[in-house]
Image (cartoon, rainbow, N blue to C red; front, side):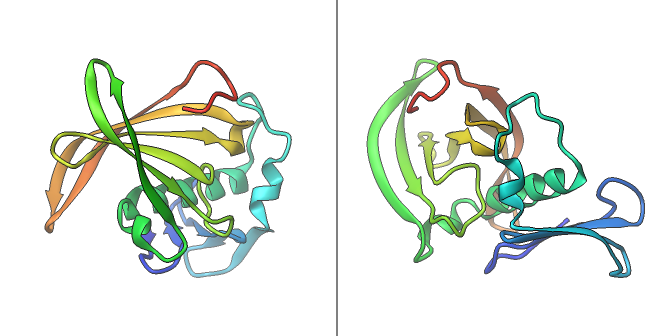
Length: 175
């Protein structure tokens, strides 16, 4: 997988089968052969999730859109917090599994593909993200608690290597 850092774009080689790659951009997702021949595409892919629930079956383009924006977000966090289009504010700390953590609310503009515009990032005592809370709009608005751990130093950047997502109880709750 390759992800751009200055624009929201990912390319995932051998995506659903050998020789097929997905190309994600917020307003367009496509599947191509490795040598660039178009197989199928979807313009405005976010609209294809309207009416979805956690039980809705996805096609390959749904999967390409979701994995494209999600992995771009994960790989570019926290750098995308300081772009001119994101708004960051520290909010009240909260206890999580007996640990009090600082929290950062990030509001993303509509043009950024992400789980939802408002997300809460829980920061541990080392200044590393331990959890993020969001509503998975592509899955019918399911609230999620997304735990990250097992950080490794990769060329001077601390990257989490383990993720665990749990649906939070109380659909439509605000974190």
